[in-house]
Length: 102
Length: 199
Image (tube, rainbow over all chains, first blue to last red):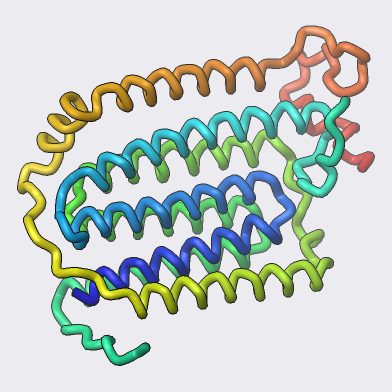
């Protein structure tokens, strides 16, 4: 029964590490990877509740599959935006992406 | 607050402990590495550990999807992104101690709140069992009661990938001639030309 608490604590640790990476890293690719880490932490919560929740069912796992799909789409679009930005500005430093016009 | 830490030392707990340590070590190393490629590979290690945790949670299909999608697709995509954008950030990650301290304090506060909430919550005893044939059950669920979200997600993926291709496609002629140069055929890597050194 305490295994659920352990899984939730691990997910919280991973989420906070991902949040720290998002907030402090300058490389935009690392920021994207940290967002993926945060999404994975949420997925771990979903799968843990699918097994140890009050009604063990597969719905949490199905929802985590949907989350993974959205995460994949987000990564693809993010990399595309980054490459397009790199062509314009020749940098991947997120501090320099500070204006909308080109 | 700590009175309900009565963990029985079973095999599942040891497997969980090993995989959790692997995941956290991978994430911490990914935060602390200096080179970007090392960060990506370390995060791939974290994702593999998370797949192991999914196997431990009787979610085999989600574990395989995790390995295929995160380790196989997302991390490799990020490494391609790193290769295509010249990463000159080795050694330039020095300054901004105030921001890093503030971010660390904020993350620690968030973790403290989450940890307190998890420890003070009372989870009910789970009832029911997960089905043994995981993949078939998920497939039946996806095509019966989750058919509409499934189709919507497929439309979302198609739109996102077409949008990604359209975004990353090189424009034939730069509109005001500032960023993208048209002479890109004979150079193998026009991104890392002379313009990369100017900022």
